[in-house]
Image (cartoon, rainbow, N blue to C red; front, side, top):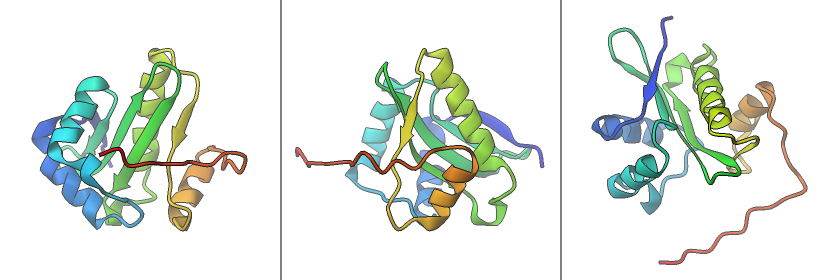
Amino acid sequence: MNINIAPFTMDIYEKVLALWKESKGIGLSGADSKERIRSYLERNPNMSLIAEDSQGTLLGAVLCGHDGRRGYIYHLAVQSGLRRKGVGRKLIQECLARLKAAGVQKSHIFIFEDNAGGTDFWKGIGWTYRTDIRVISKDIE
């Protein structure tokens, strides 16, 4: 399969949102509105990516960014019939290359505790499940 990786731009937002909505383990919120995703992409230019086939069909997508110190990856999703074919791996490899080029030495992901398939994917491509840290959140709106 020919997989083309390109920056995630707002012209494909609706297709990516539909992919996220149909993907088990992706938690969407107001932070994923068109306005907020536009802001995220502007703050992290050319970091978030999509994968397409040679006909321009969306195969997968991922949000990627950094704070200058650590990278963060969110919402990796691949069309259900195309999983385990290297699409997700290729997206992540490119994200990590872009983070490295920006001088970032470590990246984190956020994954729901009950997302066994996602945990297996990340472990399978060399990520380490951390048991020594926790995420604590607060809504500020």
